[in-house]
Amino acid sequence: MSQPTSWRKELTQCQYCWKRKAPGVTFHRCSGCKVDIYCGTECQRAAWPSHKAKCKLNSRPSAMLPHDVAQLVEYKQKTLRAFTSKHRPALCEAGTRALDLGRSPRNAEHHFLRIRVRQRPGAQLAHLLYTVEDAEVVAYADLPAAQATEMQGVLREANRTRGEGMDGTFFVMLLDVVTNVCNIAPVSFGKSATYSVPMPYKEFLVEHLDGGIVL
Image 1 (cartoon, rainbow, N blue to C red):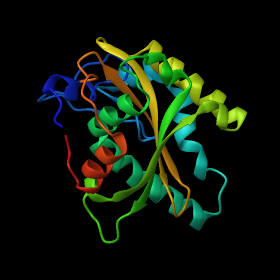
Image 2: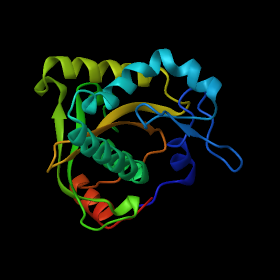
Image 3: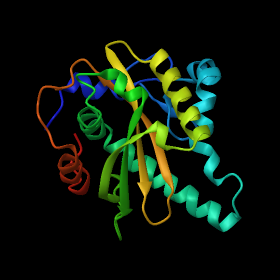
Image 4: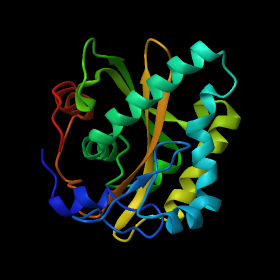
């Protein structure tokens, strides 16, 4: 299921001024978390007070590990981020259905989408790096209290600063089943999302992520 071009562009924006990526516009990724992107250093500096919590959320896992283990975690995080980035429109499409955000956008305040993935042997292209093992909706109430509080705090800030035309933001967690390394990505969903179209989200994820279909 393809998305309107305008909606796909909404998913690639400066995370401070919300300028859309266009020909001649160069975006830079945060060197800490490797998640948020900015159209220039001024926006990145201005965003730091609100971005630092999310940056910490995705940067911390390898900070206190032995060097060889930390290298593995860093590698896994890098590949998970690349895979997530390539499939963000599909993750948005699946997440809006999984969390029933068309009828109740506030469901994102209490639940997120967790996708268990396995690295595909020999894959080199970012959109083919992983295959889907399973997917499920998880309640923040089922997480350790500190992790839930941190993720929900980041989510509230993402919603406060979300781009024009967006209904809200939800979290997608891609979890490597072998190493338990994960990438936690905020995904904004907009008014142009095709909420009315029925879709079994797990089958959609397998079809698009396993098939390397980039929307």
